[in-house]
Image 1: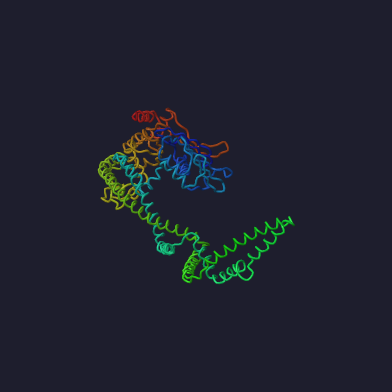
Image 2 (image 1 turned 45 degrees about the horizontal axis):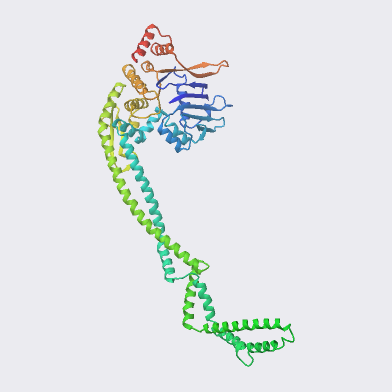
Amino acid sequence: MLQQLTIDNYAIIDHLKLQPDAQLNIVTGETGAGKSIILGALSLILGERADTNVLINKEQKCVVEANFKVTAYTALKEALLAADLDEEDTCIIRREISANGKSRAFVNDTPVNLTILNQITALLIDLHQQFDHLALSGDSFQLNALDAIAGATSIRSEYQQAYNRHKKQETALSDLLKKQAEWQKESDYKQFLLDELTNGAFKENEVEDAAAQLKSLTHAERIGTVLSQAEAILQEGEQPILNELKKILQQLQSIEEWLPQSVALNERLNSALEELKDISSEISELKSTVVLDEFLINSLQERVDLGYRLLKKHGLPDTNSLLKLQQELQQELQLSMDLGEKIAQIQQENTAQYQIVTKLGNELSAKRIAAAPAFAKNVNELLALVGMPNAKFEISIQKLTQPTLLGLDLLSFELDANKSGRFLPLHKAASGGEMSRIMLCIKSLTAKAMQLPTLIFDEVDTGISGEAAKQVGHLLRELANYHQVICITHQPQVAARATNHLFVFKEEQPEGKITTNVRTLDDTQHVEAIAKMIGGALPGQAALANARELIASTN
């Protein structure tokens, strides 16, 4: 609900504050007083493009600010959260235009772009100029209205939840299929690489160990010669080192009695002799292991060649890196297999979910089809009352081949304005004033069931008077029992229905400047204003009595 609208420095408005009530706010005033200018300022809140020509004082910025009470307004709450904006019980929309043409918009003091502004304010204000767009795009508003009349909001909510689950599964399935396609391009090559590594059947450090062993085997002859020579020097030959050391040890031991200092030398020499015996024994053992095995050499050479080729191919440093790569390839290919199983599972689940969507969509369609004739009949009855007796309204429902968030139906509100037998969509068949009255009729029928923003009607009574104007006023008052309504009118029958009467007027400032302002009329002023609409600027007693009678007839 709009609680307050403040306009500063816009066209001929210096400063204006408008405070509507929660029901039917009637706006009246002489032609040219500035009623349309107020709507123009309000359109800035709705996201219209700004023009610096609207600034009275070029030294100051133009500011339009609207305060809305939005407690328990679910749709707005969701929109604010989606736009990452603060959610409060009061929503403050502000638009500023500077003299250099720069425009800024704010929602709860947070800067927003015009797209976000339009999305938010579309949930707060429904200005009749927007009806053409609603009629043109049709789907959302028209389906909302029919579903409200059909009592189908519950099943529609159930359908939309099922549809959203279906679309979420479709998105997940599409992502997995893309990933599978990407993996499939490489899977054959990866499988080849894995087979190559698997067939190699390498063990940890095998290539390095085989290379070392191969190095020994290829030099077996030289190694054997060196070891044999060493063994001969130590144990064989004409003067083996071990035998000579034994002789020296025996001789030294023979002089220990006369030379006590030789005891230490004997001990050291004895240790050296024992160490050389061990070395000689190990040389003998090593020599026995050195065998010139051509078959083993060839076998090791093949393993080393294979290992080096794979290491070079993959740019890896050692055998263990090859084994790690083998494990990674196995995991990737297993994931690819698991992905196929997951895709099959989601496809099965989505097929079942699609059947649920179709079932609920058909139930929703049945309710719409059943409710449409009575809804159209009631609209036609109201159209006759509001001055459109020759117009005929009907609802066209066509079945869609694929489900949408709004159901399985393509809905169109259509009108034959002059008994031509030719029905056209509303935006093509109705004038601006007719469109306002058609929407007034539709919204009066759906008022109890639909959550609507502040409704603003301009020219809703254009081209009508008498009983038709009276019925328009009646419908507006009925609608205002459920939603806040603001209506600009020139008809006393409509103005008499006001729960709050706002009078727009021009006044001359001391410096000679003409500005537009607005004031809320009390009961006496309300009667006088309606009397002037009936009898002119100086209404007589008859006009005053007529005004009181009109007001009394609304109670």
